[in-house]
Image (cartoon, rainbow, N blue to C red):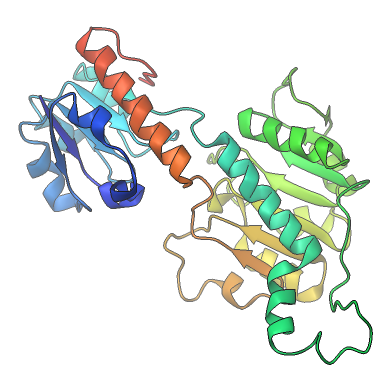
Length: 315
């Protein structure tokens, strides 16, 4: 069996144990694949694995040997799932592999924006503490999470884990989602109430045509002065110009983003010059443990396909 990985560099597979894949067939690893090469690399493949390389209807029509598509992520919008279904090709994703990792990133942002560790380290290295007559020193006032209100937009698996950790920090937790989530460990309220009462708001909802740019000047105006905003979901949820303006005015005291509207980030993105903006490069999911789970779960899907019962099928 031929297993083709179209964008192995996205997973940095050199850091992972690929034995579960190699045990199932001949493995071809390509660091990156552009649109012109995709059809060529699918020729003769029984299984194709992709993270960000798009598989369109036209490409899939030429992949006559293809028996399964594995998406090396939870989101599967890179694949034309309708076309795959029409061709009898199951599309399998990897649900829940990074719930803990993304949650840790959320609190990494939140703790940095309230305890200012990186800024303190920089200033201490520049001599600020050495020059201080007191034994203790800080420039930005540290804030406690305990007793503050955390607003979670999106009450699914990640949102619920974030809420649980927030409660462990002693935070009051509010949640908003279009549908009720009975297992959400917080109080589900309207979006307006969440915005008005939260000291920090974190986004965990999927991106849709309806919610594109819903965090904008109007939304931010409903938030507390000096609130914090975190986005580890999708860059399209946020109007980045409006967020940058709110950071500049002080309406928002901080913005932590793992995702932006165009990735890699464009040199003209207004967030790059906004004060109190903390950025990571779409890596909240990317702990070595989470990436190894992607490998292991995808191998289970391939084994299931070979036995006539693929798992995590999304089409």
